[in-house]
Image (cartoon, rainbow, N blue to C red; front, side, top):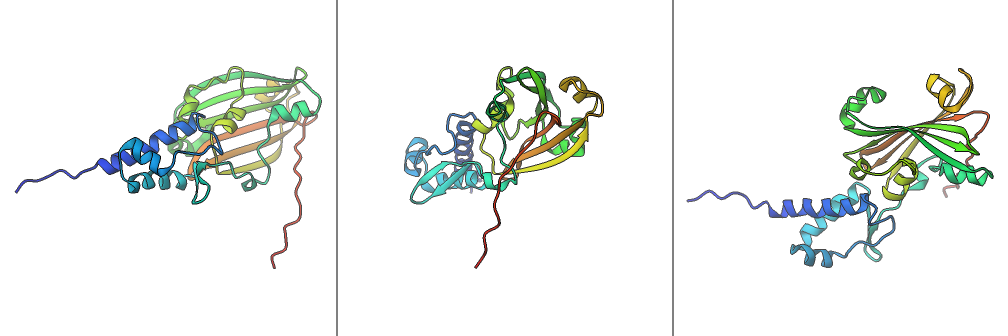
Length: 245
């Protein structure tokens, strides 16, 4: 009687299908709303069973990357904008809507290890991040300094994205589907970094917005935005909660 190694092809192929579909979504090749190949097409492409394809798709759906509908088919998931108290704003569009010319200036762009002190103990399980510090301007005057961590395990394409002329925020919104966002808003006094970047006096009142986005259980990005209190405000419009009959 001979021992036989277990056939791991289905598991390996399922992981390969998931990885390749995920890579196309995270790279921006397949954007939110785009229809994915059908299960039949994927079966033909990979030479596998429907069960293997279904397992890969179910895994992607569980992370929030794709949305499956029996009638509409499988599509790249759109962000659930209602999941946040505030929508995630487009700073450039907001500045231009106020009649000002938008400007962007990156100050720092580097890879940081999981133990980054800016993230505290939590950083150890979030993995390596790309850290971008940038200033956003209105008519040449700084109105916002942003510190952003993008976690490479969750967003591999961010490792090589070009943030020299495009801020990471719009790039993320255009390329990376997310499922949940959390905001924290506070009034703070300008510290030494904000004083230099925003060209204000030390202790000047500022508005702090801390934002974190997830895809399923994965943290995609953590951003810390400090707005000049005399130059910017945030507005949200909402209505009463509908009655439940």
